[in-house]
Image (cartoon, rainbow, N blue to C red; front, side, top):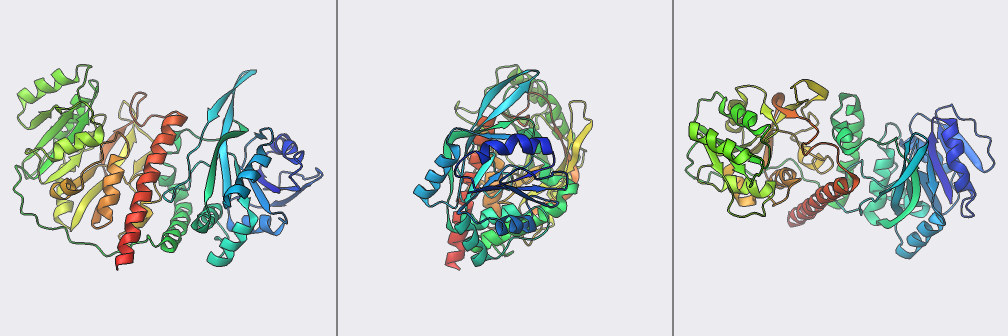
Length: 490
């Protein structure tokens, strides 16, 4: 096999490559660099480039690869292969006929002079694993024959930018499996990759917009190859003729948020509108004083509908179903998390105006990230300007979220319903609605999303991050299968 990686730091290169070169399966190593590395080690060749993941760089690596297998090491990382790790990966590839094999790994965490190993499992690859930040671990073993067949059949990856490796793995995955070996086959020195909370908004950073457009083009072509791409042709939202008690309901699911829920409720009650609305708070059996607090607030303002579910097994999605199926729910159901606030007194009016001004099954606004003191924190405004009517619902299968606040046509979402889960329930409904109906956007900030140590969007451990990511990948898989069925019927 040929080993390839990217290094800025010559010392990291010197620490990483020798254990790989000692493996009898390795013929040579290709070091991609920006000019700082001098390649003098036997068995190593190198070339200079600006990006490890561009199509031009991948073409250069393939030109220099004369072996059946290509092992790509995660860029900029110090990685130590486990005993017989490369042999094990080759065995798995030959047994499965996969286009690529990847595995779990250990992270070495340094603490002064001491260090410890932490297990870092990764997820299985699914048809819906379209996000470019899918974690393959530090080692990706490709079949060179599978790469060459994919490029011959589907064309080369884009030469410039960072989408080349992403485009390549999508093309390889079209006809060959990407096989996860659930064994810890390498150790990576921790410190090079952000936690879940840090990387959550990478795709929204304005500095990454050109890269994101390249990723969107690659994902769009992949969906077209799969038969899952949908043209911008939408169903009209039916007029159900349902009578509602009001035009809108703000829906706040809550459990044990005595510190923040009163602020959220007051933010909702402070909305200035030309129509009647209420605030449905679904109190999921709180135990920290939230329940009596909400009961007191409801006695003082009859616009507060304090619901306590009759059953104890509901998650956030189940609480949403309690709200939308309540006879108190208005024509439009508008999200407000119990940690968060609307950014002004006109948020609700703007959302309803957007519904009235277009034929939308759902409307999504923009939000600003703030700390506990309501001070703006990076990256600030999250507006999802990548969205377009022409391709937004297709690109939604690549990104991990669609924004906030989210608002729904109540009668329509009653027919779809929320999955009873505690993560991704909103994404599931948004994907399902976008399959048939237009989604309206508002690009100004309507909402303050608070980040604090105890909330559900704080940085998560590996196991929970994997579980959340796998669930969203499964939602995307389900949606891809459904959209392929639609296209087959056309």
